[in-house]
Image (cartoon, rainbow, N blue to C red):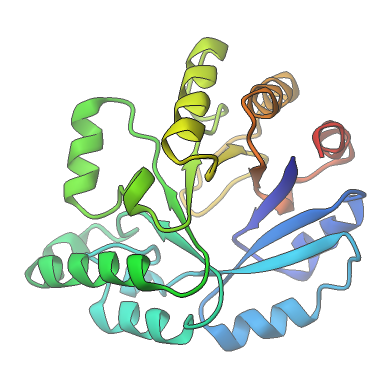
Amino acid sequence: MIISFFEEYPTKENLAKLKLVSFPAKLYLAAHSIGEFYRLKDKIKSKNVKEVVYWPLLKKEEGYWMSPFADQNALKRIMEETKGIPVLWDAELPMKRILLLKNMFHFYRSRKMIKDFISAHEKEVYCAEYFPESGIIYRLLKMLGVEFRAKECGDYEVRMLYSSMHEFSGKFMKEEIEQGVLETKGKFIPAFGTLTKGARGNEKPVAKWLLERDLGIARDAGVKEAIIFRLGGLTKEYAEILKKFS
C-alpha cells in the first residue's frame, strides 16, 4: 500500500520531516499558485518521495478551499494553471463563511464549471471531500457542490476519515472503506489522522493504536493508497507504524 502525505504548510521545518520517511511515499503539496508549487517541489530531494501532486489552495479571502462559493476568477485561474498535470481538488466550503452570501449569485455557474473541469481534466483528479456523518448532511453537501462520490469524483475519491476527529468504531471504518473500494472499483483513497493541526485549528493528534487500526483495515480491504494528514506532525513513532503498511 502506498503511504502518502498531505502537507498544507510546506515550510522548511515541515518538509524536513521527510527525513523520517524511509519507505516509498507520495506527497500532496499545498501551494497558492503553480509557480509556488514548482519552487517548493524543486526543494524536495528525498529519494523516497516518488511523486509530488499539486494541492492548490486559494487565498482566504477567495475561499481557501475549492467550492462553488469560492471566488469564480480564482477557480478559473486554478483550472487554467493545472492543465496537463495531476491535481488534488480539495472540495470544502469557504473558510470565511461570509463568502457563502457574497458569491451565492455565481453558485450554479461555478458548480457547473467545477463538475465540467473534473470530468474533462486530462490528468488525474483526486477529489478530497468531507466525511458526511448522515444521509441528510451528504445530500446537503452534494447540493452545495463539495460532495461528488464514486462516478462524479474524477479519477480518485479521497475521503477524510480522521479518527482523531470522530469516534469511528472499527466496524464502521471497515464498512465505509470496503464500500468505498467497491463503489469506485478500487479508486478509493482514505485519508487518516490527524497527526497535527490544519487550517481549522481544532485537529488533534490521532492515537497510535487508532492509526494502526485504520491502516490495517485499509490494507485488508485492498486499498492501494492511504494519505496521512499531515507530514508536519510526523514523529519517529508514527513513522514506524506507517512503514509497517508501506
